[in-house]
Image (spheres, rainbow, N blue to C red):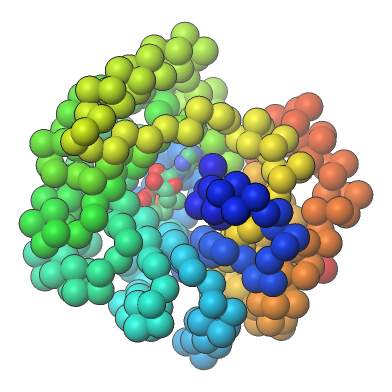
Length: 323
Ligand SMILES: C[S@@+](CC[C@H](N)C(=O)[O-])C[C@H]1O[C@@H](n2cnc3c(N)ncnc32)[C@H](O)[C@@H]1O
Ligand code: SF4
């Protein structure tokens, strides 16, 4: 469950009650130094039509004007974006809460210090194994030692550091050790949940998807570890898969917006629908489209087909415009 949904539930509100999203999940690029087998974004190379500097700053100004409280920057690898620090500085100078999701490989002592100065809400580092060989088997071209070193640099600078672990058949058995490692690194928390059948994960589903039995053990370990670290470190897991999430969202859409590097705005990760384009429309206009899109028969019918036939999740990155 994303942060916008948690805020909605606490306030007893629906997404329709808001004039703007509560939360922006912004994939600022698709460029990446890794080629993870499970990558939901199929990241690697840049898109040819990514937003330019003027478009990026036009969007940033709208985030501030609409008083959106919380933004998460992701990618691709966000630290490879030439405007990464300028974007962060702009958001932080406007008092917007900011989370960054990264593979950690570009965070050395200097970068950790720069990040610390920006006082992010959190930095999430992906660690998909308790040792180098497991992590690097999934995160092709990845360097586990660099990701672990990034955690150390950040913790040393007092940055709220969270570790994200995505379970697959390769690494699911290591979740307990991974949590112990996170604690020894001084992480603030560990976050995990089921791998989503989207992007490269959909293509590699046959070799990646853990069995029901493996998931059963995984969740049992998580429950135990949650208890063990109760007073010392946050261990959080989302128990639902992407199909269960989609069923829920059809009834209770989230008050959030998912922004792609080229300014297109996706309705939700698992569906192909795009409900606006920041190069042509304001965020306010797109938010209206977003609200209408959840009532659109084409969306509802396709979502129901996906729920009945999860293989269709593989279509989620083939965008369909509905605005
Ligand atoms: C798309 S990545 C982008 C940020 C950065 N490159 C990284 O790997 O952390 C954001 C997060 O999504 C996770 N992720 C990627 N594909 C996924 C999938 N199919 N299911 C669940 N999580 C996934 C990654 O492991 C990472 O924690
Ligand atoms: S999961 Fe992150 S690091 Fe891996 S390929 Fe995707 S964007 Fe790159």
